[in-house]
Length: 308
Image 1 (cartoon, rainbow, N blue to C red):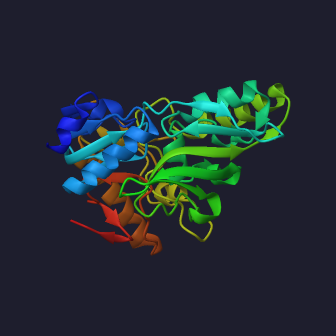
Image 2: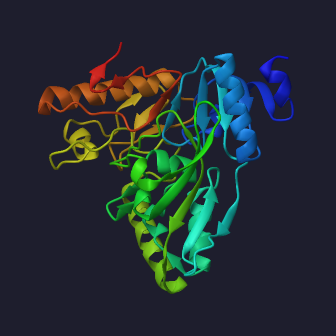
């Protein structure tokens, strides 16, 4: 039996991906799967690994630039993993959430329960799985600050629970060693819902004022380099705001965001990213590293080196 015959209920061929990303760009996936549980996810991982099929993990589709030609391989969407529940801890401050839960939904759920800690992620459109893999956050803290442990599926299909100390969480990074996040356990703190909501609203208002949240973007393109000045500030100082290639442009509000004005192509976005990288490198000697992920392979900047 072919591996694909085992998953006919959750498998689609040549599924368009652009509409599944916040940037709205990209071709189709040769195989597209939507597991409905951690157990089914483990079966999919094991089968794809045994068949030697390249795998790409999809959450909410933020921080993602997909090539116009699409993906030859299997894109596995985690959006059906939507479970949330209170933990079994005596204090009632722990929450368990599956990888496909969107951060705005989880934040609203925890606020209603009077549990604080996730307001640091207000305004971030990703999912729980993506928040862990990128250690999402901002100046007020990161997702990993409240993480206790994660349930992951290893490349051979084994389901494991890993303590947060074993996940290599750093600035916009983690070390999953090929595993995919299925669920997380978070430890929050009791507080008045109104107080939590006020803090979340203040952070959201700040993001709205400083970032183009109303536009189609992939979020910040580059991670902030060490040394003080942010990637956005460096890109602004080399004149990237407002630069345009076809239907893609650099935001006038924040130079670390590329906007799809409607019908933009991946190559147009890559051209803008290359230009920004080269300008900053030429003027400041700083080689910016990508925060976004490129499918099917890195084509712009990889570990500080340009690939043409």
